[in-house]
Length: 369
Image (tube, rainbow, N blue to C red; front, side, top):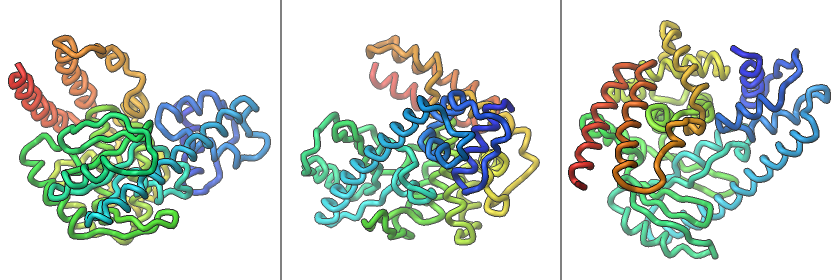
């Protein structure tokens, strides 16, 4: 592990748990903050920087950059909250109780909710109320600048200026038919039967059950790893759900869900890193297994390489701008690139994912041609 990585994780652990950061060596703030940007938690580490002693403070140039990042994230969240409150209120007035997913529901689990970075507002309304909810939100008042609208299958995307909202008919797209049937039961349990009503900065919202919060946050992390690339921000999200709900979870239900979705080994590998790198207490990680450390080390390398949404991927950046055969062939090539990336760590899971996605892609290709 490089010096930059050691400093990055030391500061990240200190930010999450309020523990002292290891500052025995001078902090290379440029290298650390570039790594933090790569993994989507530069605001969290910026706040931590100003909590250190004077000797370890960043240079004036980097301090100004960090303050700007923190200010921008706060303003972004305040605007998102205003839109979220307007949307939830409008839906409730029309007899629909939305479930807030991801962003806001996870931010409240952090020591300071304003320091978690997220881009979308995600709400789940289910199949029965989906079309009605979309119609209500298309008429949402408040002076927002409207952008694009698109139905991507499992969700409807609406942009309020630079603030996108995803209205979910289902909470996740599961390509494998057998896993999709199993996931439907998980979703019903966590998003219909057992919900939580919580207060987010003075406004009451509905969020998923505790078990679903843990499972879904990890599943979202896993989905990022298998597709667009995962950064430490997503891994940290799962760690924070486990910390917040420690001692309150139905562990047998969580075990059945992970096993049924073929996710127990990935869970244990990611979990090992949550303990070793993020400092999550081992007692707070269900199904901890030290024997997975070799897989976890491979996973660590992939996470460090990819980062949040695999932003630095040359293959991703080479995607043709114009729709057409070239773009379709690039998408097919991407399946093989993803498979190689995944199979280095989880060969069995990569094989299942590749077969499911390839079948789906070929079906779409021949249907449209």
